[in-house]
Length: 131
Image (cartoon, rainbow, N blue to C red; front, side, top):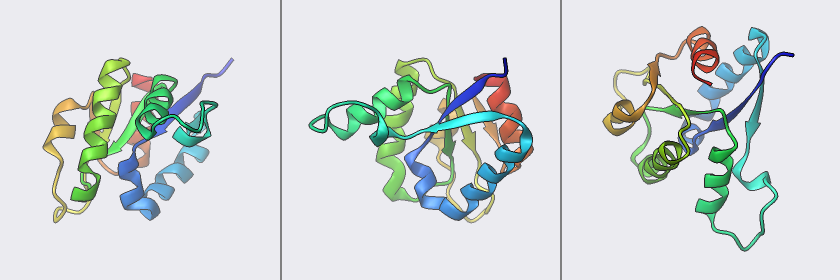
């Protein structure tokens, strides 16, 4: 039976929604079976904190997809996601900025299990290799 990869897409993707949709479209064509886990659709109590929602989602994922060229407003959440990924031993795939004008998040690059460029084929290969 073919594996379904449970993917956690970092909050950082919200800073680059349109570009990320293109990568997702490729995954649909690549033959990889996947499911995106969404932190606020898990069955935990509504009184639970945002951090708990995120941690439980990361815990049930096969790997994290994170963008290494994020706006500064994403930095705090990105660092928390990395911390939780390490805690639960989940591989991190960092996608380097495609625009040389964007600041690369050295913290994420240093903590990623694999750094790839904005090529959808590399994304698919990284998921299969690490997850």
